[in-house]
Length: 142
Ligand SMILES: [Mg+2]
Image 1 (cartoon, helix red, strand yellow):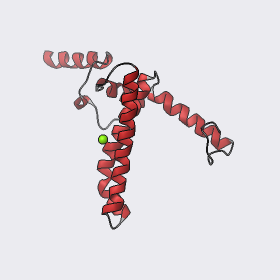
Image 2 (tube, helix red, strand yellow):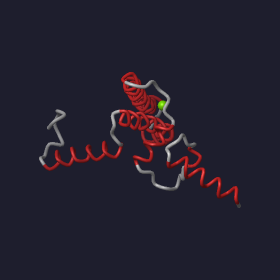
Image 3 (tube, protein in one colour):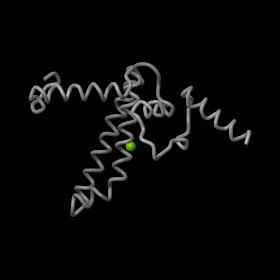
């Protein structure tokens, strides 16, 4: 019994101090908040510090985005039915989307943003465009 309490206390301390934690402690049934994901992503980050780190992460984001595109391309190339092929590859695509999310979380972290701040800013931008009838069209500041 004493060992179980000690184990629980150690896990709580590790989690609260954002020390590297193993993903085996994650409750897969519970919904995960974006900022919670970002903290876990940070605990797995291994890349150079400083400006070089942001370059590294940006290249990684581009690479992983390309991997998503590559999976979709191969569905088109290798499947008689796009939707059947897509269904078969969904698991692989999900993993690549996770890699994209990891880089997005890490870049946001290095720039001092939480993922929730980034998500809220995007929703506000889209809401403003929607109200003004500017969802279509081009330009970053419409
Ligand atoms: Mg990948």
